[in-house]
Image 1 (tube, rainbow, N blue to C red):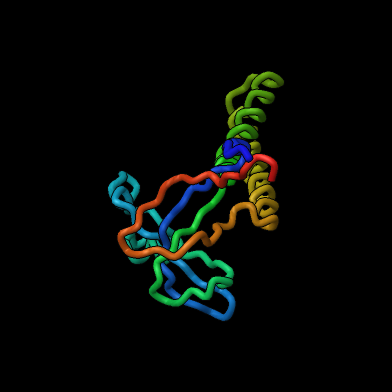
Image 2 (cartoon, helix red, strand yellow):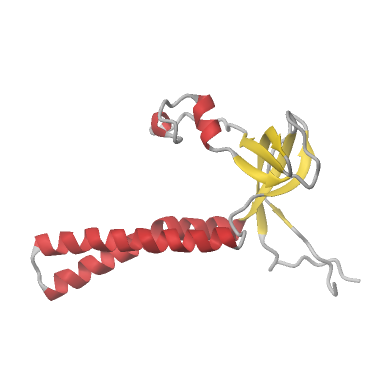
Length: 171
């Protein structure tokens, strides 16, 4: 049997998370803070809490997983998400609204030529694009494409890397 790699298999982007609560069949996890987190220019505005503290940013980023692995509070685990899911999420969040805004603005500029009409069309296009992005994000979420997956338990000194699931030829 040939041990060649299946290059069509999607890569997984890994991240380390800590189990902070278990509620029935759900485990709540907080992602590990990376060394770059808090170092960028927008670190004070990061997260939904608005205070800008590390604890509030991490709490705002909590997510849940089905607890099929029997995770307990305090464990450190590796979770992964398919690389193509990140691309789909990025395109949904940025490309759809931007394309709609620019497209409506270009159409208004071609049809009327006045700046005020073009700006109003761009604002309307942005609103339309944000609505379409919200619908697409809901569709992706409902299909489970954006949900992280439990990969394995780990220890505190673990690091993450991109992996590709390999299949042997003929399987």
